[in-house]
Amino acid sequence: MLANGTLEYKQGMLKSYNIGCAVSKEVADFPMKATNCNEVCYLCYDICQEEIKHPDHEMEESIIVDGKRVKYYEDGLGCDSKAESLKMKLECGALQYKVTLDGIPTASITENNGNDLIDSEYSGKMLFMGSNDYYVNDLDKNFVILAKGEELQISSAGYTEPTLPELQGYRFKLLKVIMSGDKVAGVSIEVEKPDGTTSEVQALKSRNALLGKDEKGHQVEIRAFEVTGDTAKIIAYDMSTQQKLEHNKKMGDWRVNIDRKKCNEVDVDDYKDLTNGNADKRWCLTELTLAYEGDITLGVGDTVYFPTNAVKFSFEGFKDEDFGDVKCSGGEDKIKIVTEGDHKVKLSFTTREGQRMEDVRLDEGPYNVEDYFLIGNTVYQFKGADESDNRDYLTLHLRDVSNANDFDVKIYPYNGSFAGFDYVKFKDDDTNKQHPCIGDPCKTYNGTVLGVMAYHHSAMLWMDRNNDNIIGLNDIDLTDIQNDNCP
Image (tube, rainbow, N blue to C red; front, side, top):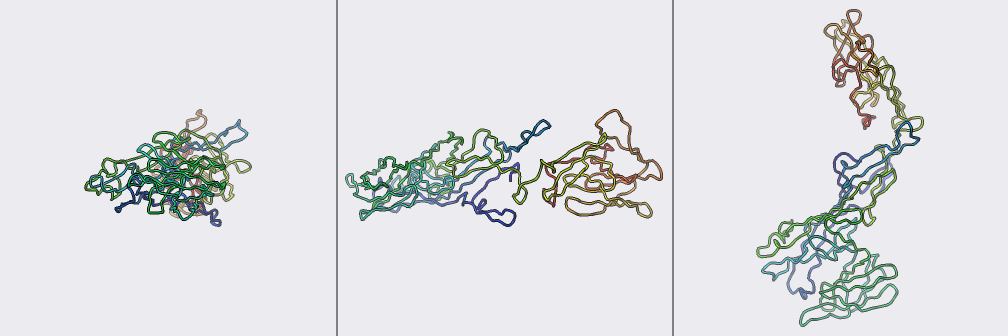
């Protein structure tokens, strides 16, 4: 899954996936994308006597995994260890959650010298951790307070029941409108609680109505924002779900960052197109980011929960392309690297299809017929060689074992006698060249094969990576051995 770059998962990217091309597993619609608008026309603007704009704000959340801050290692690997386990280390900032807010205002935006309201301090919905049930309860340029809630229209004709699970059992009815002179100052609401009791509360333009905690721990707060005749609109919050997000402060193990701009600089036409307004003096919030702070090491099956526990990041270990377990070590099919003689190195391993590859040479030669060797990240086999009738070229017969493909390559006579190779040895007590080829009947052929210089004489093959006549190890990466064209 992870590479060295940054992976950002947005809506639809985690919707579904296949396991073994047979089982389709659906996951929650996360991350989410939604268009929300403010709940304008507050009590302090009376009964919305004039048309008021309420611009949309397109919000989108994403999960970010910074692969550069994710490390893997074996714990307990070694001769003295009886067990080994795979670990994932998440460095500070490796996991992030981000939601774009599209410029929600922290104060009223007006035009025409403050006579016409364009938008007000935002109190609408805000995406957070896979939910669009959170409403803004309070905010400033450096903080946002969220709580799950629901917008309801209540009247004096009877009770209105919410659908939000956190508000189940509550019912609301408008009792009367509270006036201050000729202006609406608030509303009086009758609330029926889950236990069947009722109480009268007042939601005023200066403060919300707050109920005590019920037996299930829910704590309801009511904001009234629009009154028309014998109806009113309210937002009922469950403050037991409150999330306070402050810029550059921690929310549990997560560091909060709130980005903001002046409202005339955000991509909302109603703000930036004002001819006589105050958008250049108001702050709009543009992005919220939470970054997991601190280092943590996960074993296979361990989990890190994002805030609210709505989302979790789990380490499932190394998987093959079908999301199955990869055989990599242990038991009869464990990986073996052994030395032979004074310079040979051999690798044995089992492919994910169960094929056992024994004694794959990691050095540059010489290889006898039927020997396996590794060039780059692919296993090959030397199948023999044939000279042309006039000996002006040699045909090497090779097999790409990893991808089940036989092929031939032509190489041509070496110019002059061949003095032999210097070998990178495990012991340095012998520095003489080996395998020289001088005169008939020995003949040396060479040429570029598989990106390296191949030499053939005395029925043996060398693959000299740097063409320096020094035989050592090939340039290989044991973490990425090819098989069926898949790393």
